[in-house]
Image (cartoon, rainbow, N blue to C red; front, side):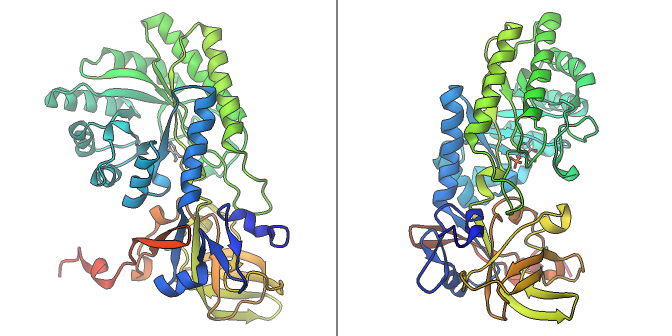
Length: 439
Ligand SMILES: Cc1ncc(COP(=O)(O)O)c(C=O)c1O
């Protein structure tokens, strides 16, 4: 089936086409889903999500027993997702009081969460101390001192990691690089020794390890290997100088996802697991360090492919010898990625998947910005008003970055599995939009 329709490889693994030529995800006809729940609609394949959780857990634990997978919630979080992550036995990387609150609302074990962020507020840190998040990943000197003071006031001694910026080059979009020297995140290597010494000296903090995260959409292992080398050099040096003990090492996330057919398939979890765990073992051996407990934080690669956006086609506008614009009923308010990062995605007509390509079409959103273009020059059968357009790889960083631009309502989300669909977030209404307004 995928031989005839190459783009199907970008959809969740068990996506198919039924007799009517409709796209089927998780056993559900997407045309029926669009009818029942309306569009734009985000569809998540539950089995695909669960399989990814299992894959990361298995592949890393096989090679490095005791590795904990922390799902990076910023990629996609709602209460149903937090519940799923809890059921799968993963921990969670959270970055705000809001994400902490959503996790708490489904009784997610907060001791299995790591709290990140380059500018955590005092209120957020108090909330973290109060509800007992597992680790606070301290990002800078200001936070170190503030957290020590707040912990003293609350008579707590939180366990912390320090986020180090290893200064490695990653070949990805500049907006999603985080591990190079010129970054707002973390302690640069030049101040890392001072950060460790300071953290060790503060009475109300329990420093157990180090963290790095170098960026997103990374295909190669090389930058991770370099970062591991730098961090373990640092740990060894600080052991010599100050008796620092690296009990825990968190090597972040960032694993690639294939968004279009012009880019290579993303390597499986086993590819990263093999190279990264090997390097940790090698470097520890070289320095005579005991093996630390390992943490990883994949976000995008857990959810991206499991999520598909469905839109209704409206206006089809031909500009002779220039371009044909096909406008859909969503766009940058639910998927900012093309406008923000120049992300290149693909799509299919869900109601006639097998229709023959008839040219190139530019898929435009409905929002009042010329830059609201979802996909440029996409080879497709000629779309018509009423067609359903399915965009794969929308599971990560679309819903969390959604906004109400043009006073639009945020989209509905369904989870599909074995032919059943359940609404996990209803579409917003005007009441939702004006709820906070005061006249
Ligand atoms: C600290 C941290 N960990 C993990 C992630 C997840 O990255 P990805 O979704 O690319 O796996 C991010 C993403 O920004 C991050 O900042």
